[in-house]
Amino acid sequence: MSHQTRLASSVPQANCLDLWREKNDWLVRQAKVAQDSSLSLRRQHLAQDVLEGLRGLLHSLQGLPAAVLLLPLELTVICNFTTLRASLAQGFTEDQAQDIQRGLERVMETQKQLGPRLEHGCRGLWNSVLRASSLPPELLPALHHLAGLQAALWLSTDHLGDLTFLLQTLNGSQSGASEDLLLLLKTWSPPAKASDDPLTLQDAQGLKDVLLTALACRQGLQELNTGNLPRALSNLHEAASGLCPRPVLVHVYTALGTCLRKMGNPQRALLYLVAALQGGSICGPPLLEASRLYQQLGNTVAELESLELLVEALSVTPSSEVPHFLIEVELLLPQPDPASPLCCGTLSQIKHLLASRCLQTGRAEDAVEHYLDLLALLLDDSEPKFSPPPTGPCMPEVFLEAAAALIQAGRAQDALTVCEELLSRTASLIPKKPRLFTDARKGTKEPPHCPPWISATYLLQGQAWVQLGAPKQAISEFSRCLELLFQATPKDKEQGPASNCEKGCTSDVALQQLRAAALISRGLEWMASGQDTKALQDFLLGVQVCPGYGDASFHLIQTLRRLDRRDEATALWQRLEVQTKLPQENATWSLPLYLETYLSWIRPPDRETLLEEFQTSLLEPCDL
Image 1 (cartoon, rainbow, N blue to C red):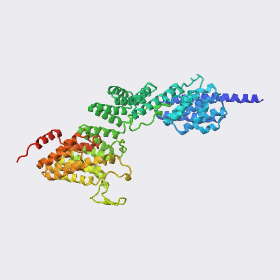
Image 2 (cartoon, helix red, strand yellow):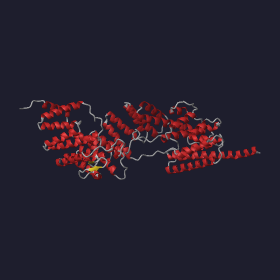
Image 3 (cartoon, one colour):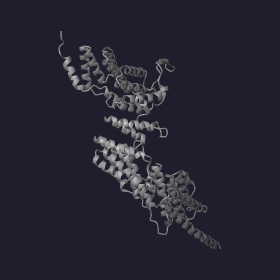
Image 4 (cartoon, rainbow, N blue to C red):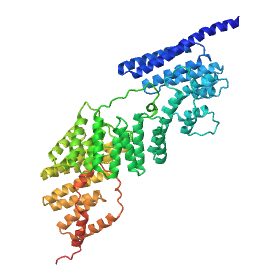
């Protein structure tokens, strides 16, 4: 009688199994219909309907006690549900990890072994399931499919230790086996599906191919960032030779170009960058890398053309590619690090890079055009706020660079307008008049803190007045600059972390150079108006505040000659000659671009030739 009862109960279960399998297969086919739809809204609605259908089917299956007969279908439905859900969400969530774990628990329930192993979490469950001796062979394809999803989840969340353990267990490895993830993935051989198995959105072999490409790509980029170029090259070649979708292939070719450029092989690098640009609609990273390559080769025209094309590309809204309802390589790759060659930055960042490179390479008119476009973009409230890269300038420095470019291009009045705009936006930071405040911590009187770039604004305004032929206004601006500069000190650690501007401007070197530049500029104006004594004082102060700055010494020598103070000029020239033979302490220090540009304006032309003339004239006998 009990035998008849079991037989009677198995017949409806078998009938239901056929119905549930037919529903799974129909839902998979519907997902493929949704994928092929040309209407994005209809595609999204159909995909959501399929997702809800799979959720309901899984609920029905898991509403029954776990049974070996049902498990292949149940695990397949979990795989289809997880695949579609992760694809629509463009990532894995904790819910999907729980769905996978619930599938493993159902397997263990059929083995009568569920209990203490739960304490070991998903990793312990996988160990128990895969080492179980009584697993039916027909369950293995679905189980390996589920393992592929678990591997994808752990790879995307950087649980590489768990992933290594899972692959070792799948391969039947003993303790002490290889921990090379790429080798373990290649060794993994998912069982082939039977022709009458339930349909899947993506099978285990497809997942394996995706995992191989994603892992090779991740490892290649990591090695590239850490400077291990041969390993990076090998892994990136592995990624390019695998199942690599077009958008990922563009990134891989770009990274290969970066790697080869750094290895000193620019021609091969260029071939990969051309291939990347031909490979799809994503052209930002390869164009930026091409500009770096041309800069390294000294081809400034091509470098700037690449940046101009990149600005155009970022100005156009990219067309979004239709996503497939699968676990794809992009889903398993991390967001590119700002320092990565795959991160090309925002439109404002690239506009700034283009403008600054034009200024650095002497293309003042082009620099002005790009800086004014950039300021218009940044001051438009509808545009996102300027977000500089970690080593880039802050907003005030962009204004200062724009003013410097305008002065370089002979547009002094426009430079004054840009400086006035900056000062009006930062009026609250500018001390109205010199005053001291008491520092309660130190018991001393100190000047109020004023950001050095405000002083630099007055410096540029002074130079603009020089260009306009207004020496009085120029001297007034230089004096105001010096008044603020001699109040400025490097930011106190207790005041908190410094901003990008303060890191670049409040260093000892930058402050010294700013002070020397202002003193030399005012001294030159004194000299032009015939006030050599005042010029001498400023040049002497310039040498004192920035001892290693040879230009200040040169101007001082020239003034001493004009005042016929030969002995002092000779002594200073001899010190300067010794100084030029010593290694420069600040030679590797990176100054703000506007300050580098400014220093080039007050640098004496043909300094070496003039120093030789000084040597000849100073060694001549004096007339009695």
